[in-house]
Image (cartoon, rainbow, N blue to C red):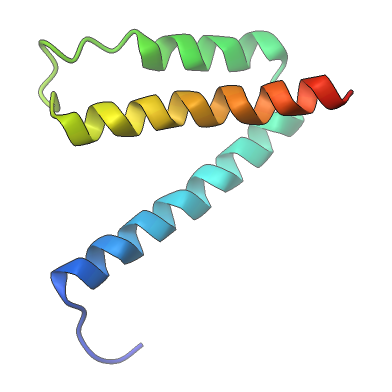
Length: 82
């Protein structure tokens, strides 16, 4: 890779990288984790106390909400298909 990225380009690149990592993690979880583990993951994310947490900002809160939705959507859809 050559050239330098603008701050916006770096942010977009970081978001895409995170999305790819999340997809990989979800694929692995789908193979190895029973339903109870998946439910526990979503519950743990939901239980984060954003009032007292150092990363208590709207962007992080939205990211956690999206992560919970992804976990629940992916596995609910797959469980319905079986």
